[in-house]
Amino acid sequence: MTSDLGSILGLQISEINAADTSEIVSVMALGLQGLFDKRPHLLEIELSLAKYPGLIDSLAGGGFAVLSTEIQNSVTSRRSMLRQIADLYLPKVRCNPFPLQYAITDGKRHPLRPTVAPGEVYRRYLPEQGLTLSFRTVDPDADLDVFHTWHNNPRVSAFWELAGSKDMHYEYLQKVTADAHMHPVFGCFDGEPFGYFEIYWAKEDRIAPYYDADDYDRGVHMLVGEERWRGPHRVVAWLPSLVHFMFLDDPRTRHVVAEPRADNAKMIGYMQQAGFCKPKEFDFPHKRAALMMLSREVFFDQFCV
Image (spheres, one colour):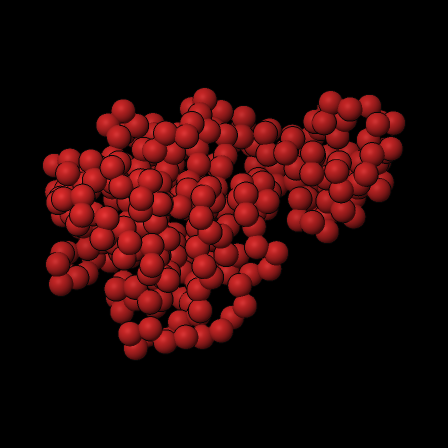
């Protein structure tokens, strides 16, 4: 697709050239993001910048686009690159990746992990759903009632096996939020919680002995608690976005993994549709599990809608 910058921004040439370059790049990134959101099968956009020469270096240098090899004074913005610009999705972006410093936990050597940020950690609008999807860090006090209700649902407890009292669930949330390798989040549609997700660093998790875990691989446990937000049409919205957050949270993350029960065919099918492969099955002490893996390259090239 070829487009003129003015048509994307809705501005005149004189307005663009008179504006601060950094401001135009920010507005342009949002405009390109909106175009890719509205056209899920659009992979790249060719932009003619002959009238705006001052923008070429800024766009290419910031990773928003690459110099065109075919058209002079043009750049190409690619979905796979723009989706990796964390500022467009994360309200709290670290200026630099957390410094590498190794630590040992329970005999496992792993990078020291940053403190989990409270509040909202990811947000995007989903045009096909007409909804805003967000993820926020769980608050044991504010979120206890919802967590308790979900885990006493027989459908949920059949897989999570955490049915119990509020006191039990409060203690569980306190433990999870205090665990440096865990990041528990609620998924929300238009601000309403629909699911609970435990994001973890794989290197110090129970999954590590069962595959060659990289220092920055992330894993996740998933459940949808609200009945009205269930269904395949919702999974195709939140699952890629959850993976998207995990890859954006640290640019060194090479793989996202999961270990659903091997007989959970529905969840495995959803994950395969989102790009995960299933290298093998293996035995945890408490269950037969399927190893599900998704690489950064495969996700951003093929499955990051």
